[in-house]
Image 1: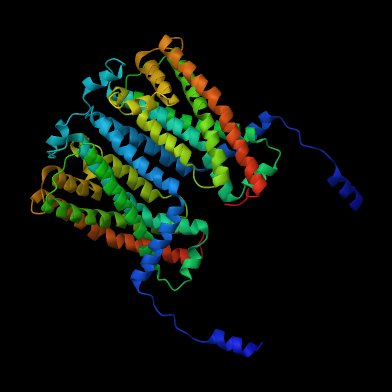
Image 2: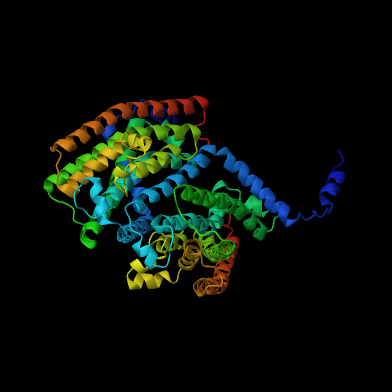
Length: 291
Length: 293
């Protein structure tokens, strides 16, 4: 064997053609789909769990009154529609907050983090690819839970204007919660265990953002804390659109949109800064791939 | 050093004979120490528990009190009705998922092989892990009850006989599900993936057991109604509510009926669970997949 030839071949500088971003992202989606498909029983359980959750709140709604819901300005559908919207749109909260750090934790856990980072794939594209599949799954579960709810008698205003407004509010919901997800990923990359940011955020927003009850039922101090959370404005806006037929032209919805934009404007630079700090620090001490 | 002496020492056939009680204690204590080292987890779970009770208390403000009478426990508040449901459902979920969760950890961390290769009898392992589960879940259940009674002024009938009766019902409830828990663990050993069985049981239990709403509302759905009364949890929850809301005791006729049903479930399911578990252990030994993940 001519060793010189081998050395020449290895030394050859053949620049890798850059794959277009969409192809990389699609590869990630296909990879995650394949992994997901191997857990068919879990897939059935995810769907069954979601249906059971919606049906539980349907049965719970049978012992509730609609008075507080109507007083809060949500005119049709009563408690069940109110709770259904809370349950369904929480899918996106979970997706936005958890998807990035869960993906990174999985790669660390399976010992594949360093392998991925040593490929030509850019870290930002890697993160984008990792969250895309979670987004598709969350959207499917959201639509399914809304469908089950509608089958059980939930009532919503479905006009083009109200649906368009819901889409805008949903985008803002995802963007605002993505900031929390990015921030907590930065923390996780450094401390490696637990997830204090996500944890505190999840239970506090469940308690004070009006997922299962109108904010007016809370004592003033909790209601005040609730106004810090983006979920409060997103859910209020979405409910006003779907339960009262309002749209982006109404002042209440605009107020919610402005509050969400303010949150995003403040939280985005902070979360990117924390993420960068955590990422750089983990790279510096060589612990990015460690669990 | 005389090498012959060393060889003789290694050759010495001195089997370690320790009783099963010591094995159970060793497994329990090792895992309990791990639990104690997770201080952040304990703190965060405790705060989450408090938050969830606060959440239920706000949900209760929307309930029409007249509709709760349908549950058959007299004029009780929804919060007291739900508090017992949530506390027992969480306890059950934590207890029955404990064993399969710890086995998953052993598999992931690569320590299952050492456990199987050791002299510890798997029955002792199961009991030790379950004991740890009872105590840790008991801490959270007690927390729920204390916050309910002391902070939210939930009117529960608390005296020596009701507390004793409630503890017995909880023990029977766990025993009636122990078979399913052991069965799920056997499946985890073989399939190495999660424990869908306990997850499924937890979701169905919470839904059909009537944790948040009176079961009376399921009467119009005969299939669901029948399924609800096929689950041991429904009997355990009914007995717990009769004890803590109405002051019934273990010797009240309606409680005795529930006790008998729970015992039957325990007698039927525990041997089946042990059989599945033994099958799981034998299969991974035979296939040589004890250490694989």
